[in-house]
Image (cartoon, rainbow, N blue to C red; front, top):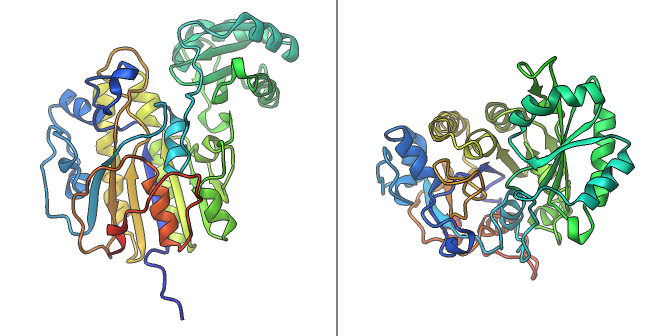
Length: 402
């Protein structure tokens, strides 16, 4: 009779953009000196994150307020470097699941989208297009939202990410029409010269610039599919659960996804993850993205807000751990950096933390950093006695199974 699995349920929680210091090649990305975790901590005179501290966070970097605790028998702590050529959401998440992105996704941050693309999008959608520059989604609504409502036009904008975003009023344009227009944009943006990682529908409500509000729950991402099947596909093909909380299913364009749980905030994401932990019985992976670190604080260069968001996560991790079973495994990580004290509004090329906890781990300790994020997916596959595909990155962290 086969031995039972060491871990029946694995939860991989991504604190989107919570990097722990520059990568060795940060100079290629003009990100030398970036450190999201450390600089957010300095902005508030020190972080209060006792749970992550007890898991070995302080061993990963000099983070103000976080003590170095070397005795953490139930947890492993390490840093992971990124192999892929990029520093965005899709590149980071795809690499966790084994994919090496060699050619980075295009961005149009400085120039806006080419006139040829805008003309074709306007023709195909039948709507006048306004905007076409890099902006915060909330700020561009203040500037152009009333015009969009008046003319039933479409607000097109981008960011430091490889995205084309389209904003329209839910009642004036309508959700289904906005989604149709985004589908047209996704088709057009498959051309090599216009290819972006994601087209995002950004519906909003309100009556005027002073009260416009984005409807996060009705947002929809039209992403590229991963360049090849991932560790998630291996899990799904072998009958294991792959539950995706937050924007995970969008990031992977539903490839390898068994179940999707949409969220409207970090707190909602943790609520729904803890609900699965406490009340659902399955075998496999729960993959969670908590986007507000990135969207609300990193890109907006709000270092104090970023620090408080990390502290809020720490409180939810305490609740999570208190409800874990002996055969549950928790991984807490990030997908890139977004130093809220750094120049500009772009992501930063950083290593990411990896904190691994289970009540059944007895020999937890600090581990040497890995050369790829894909150790996460490879470790998950190893737990379920599945083999990594030859073309995918990653070797399992065998210490977890000692």
